[in-house]
Length: 40
Image (tube, rainbow, N blue to C red):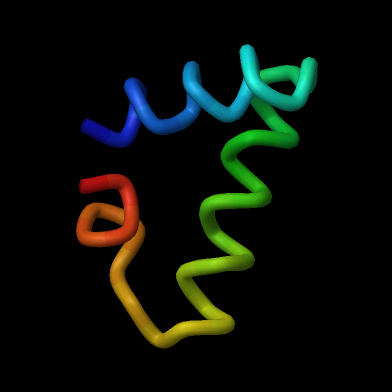
């Protein structure tokens, strides 16, 4: 699920894997939600 979310971000925003992962982690921390739940 997390990998799919990263791939979607990478395609949508033309970013690489590391940036997509950083974006997911940042949003997870900002909203106090686990990355796994955010990806779903």
